[in-house]
Length: 406
Image (cartoon, rainbow, N blue to C red):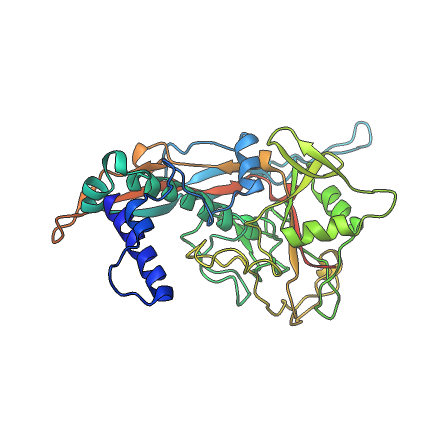
């Protein structure tokens, strides 16, 4: 801390010297005789942001620890037994058929790096002079970084490559997020991907449409975003088989919804007591804005290094070739270059999502013991590690749209 104070005084002296044209002495009387005002353990966070969706996930009971196994397997019914009305006394052909399938996901590893210089932490930033402990600062930062990485990746996908789409890319090392979950294997999700499988299970085959969630394009047939209204928000809510419990969008689309309210106040802003955040009430769910949600308008306002692996701002793409029947619900124009993705909106049923951290302490939101460098006596490094995945057991209870404008 003495080094920090000396450097502070030095640069203050240099700044004053630049204005007074004095090169010597380096310190004026005030900077040489007066300490800086520095509070103990107070560091303002001008980098990270908290997300409404992650808070709702934590509150909804989505946590389901992963104790090991080759995959995280979830059985689901995709068909029914034979039966129905018959004429009394008539014979029936009895046949057993398969009605059960499963999805399977693998854990994904996330690691945050915490390198520390022992000379700085143990000698300089020490004792009463160490107002902000660098070790605590870096460890806290690592936890927040991991939370942010998950909060951003939750809107993306975790597959090796989607069936089509030039933007989505190979992301098999990431969690299996919303863009692949909320897809039908035919229409493009907001990140361009067409995801013909989910959890290793092929969509639209033997399991028919039971794993499908149709992405909705809110723009025009010319590929241009359109004004958002209450109609598509409500219709997508009702299209979810089980009611969603939170609507999530970015600040731009949230503002558009409020700004387009009619005099009769179709939308009402209330507080969701479960997470202590206010939102626009639609039936039994609240629409909230999440600063980590992809945004065309505000995607560049966040610090550029907030995520080192995932872009927050959507990229444009050309849609898949679709038949009229395939685009009847999605409203996506066929083989059309979208001039802008616009803003993105999601309905989540978080109670149907699984947050699966590993139970092993090494990979359960934990720091590894410090490792010393072999060629630098002052350098150590710790890693904040977690093995985890996010997925939903029922994609059809969720939905998303893009192409939102004002």
